[in-house]
Length: 456
Image 1 (cartoon, rainbow, N blue to C red):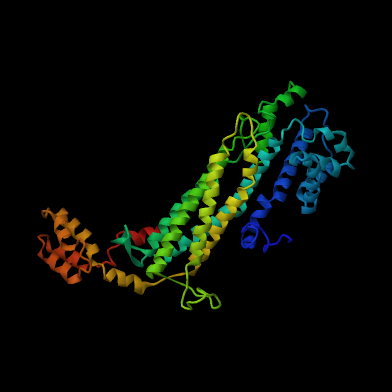
Image 2: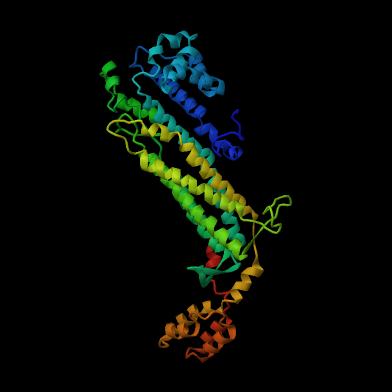
């Protein structure tokens, strides 16, 4: 079979291809080759700019332009050529070096210094920088904007529904009321805070040779300050310089980043499950699309499929993110290859993460609060006012207020307004306080919920 979305082995490249294709420029095999090529070209250009490396004269503007265009215009067809070379060399990074020498064979300036392509580098000098660029760009261009759309949607809904009262449920049981907007604001705030953690992780890089000590560099140019040069090069790529590594950059920042994504995903899992539950209770209705089908046999069904899809994909994402985070910082002695195959799954982890984001956002866009159903539950739960009544009684020194309300309400669903009002009228507290408590309803007993929701 030919490879297509219908024959692909994984759902990311099959059923969900159109939804995650925006990550392909950052995590596909083509993307990895392109970023490796970019690093190799930038390293050669950096050597040519350094007067102390006299054997590599400064390149002309025309040569620099050719090198830049080769990186900028690197195509899938070019990547196929690299893969053909790799089939001979059985080494993916060495194939980049040979590709550059072949493609630039007509440029005399480059050919005179051709052996400075990949000069003093181990493969991981190229790979770690490529991975850092891939993760940084995908975060800035795809992942954080997608997350921001969820935060903005939640914040807007929180404002719109700030004053819509809702029965809270602790341990699944009726509890002090809140508002729909405040509960959405809780998630918006949590996600906003964790998005800042994702954004704050600094991808790191190194270009210090086979075991991290600039051995080959110093063998060729013993008087040159290679560490300063490497730092300038790495920071010039907008990555953080790591001065202490083995053959590999140790991937600690990757663990931090993947853990940060996983925390975001865990919050979204919490949101997915809460939204699913509130839909089940009838607190939310879902906007109906005319041609959609909820069940193959039950015509009435409008299922919360977006939140379920989000939950499933975020679970997969966190499973992969967890493995990446736990495995990547560990390498036997100065280097083993177990990280190589694992790193190829960065796009898998973030692909499932992005699917979770987009499904959650679609689900949120379909939600409509159902004030009638919300009010029904509040009207059936007058016992939740036992809390403010006993608290006011405490203020005025009434003996055993908690115990009195416990005797009246605990485990006795269906407490009526009349029963509570009779209790309030008999309590020894000032008349104005009685009147204030008599004015309370489950729907008005929401504290600062509306204010907090609007403040977000």
